Amino acid sequence: MTTSVNGHRGVTQYLLQVEEEDLVRSLSLLIELYGIAPELTEPYEGPCPACETDVKGAVECPDCGLSLSVGTPEASRQHPFYAFLESKGLLPNAAP
Ligand SMILES: [Zn+2]
Image (tube, rainbow, N blue to C red; front, top):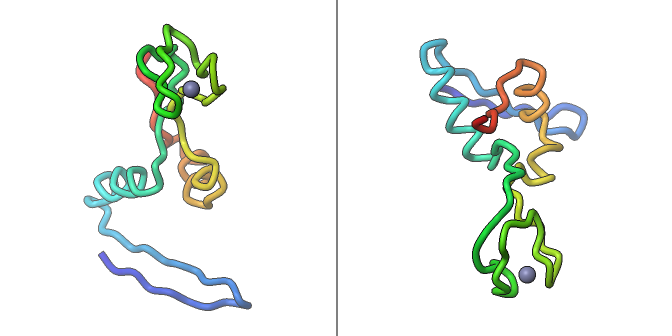
């Protein structure tokens, strides 16, 4: 695996080159790196991570409004890698 960095008109470009047989493994590492996760819309049960209110089956905390569904952080959604995965249909899917 090699990486190279080019500056192009003030935009830093990263090129990641991997052997074909390493592609799937590399993708899963990158997916992990960017925190790309399947959307989880199942109701959450347990103490709220922010205010410790006991949440019984909700997608957001009834007390502080914290979203309790797990998903990809907005910053990672804006990343070209996310768009790449999306265009190739490689985004992780939530289990049915
Ligand atoms: Zn809360």
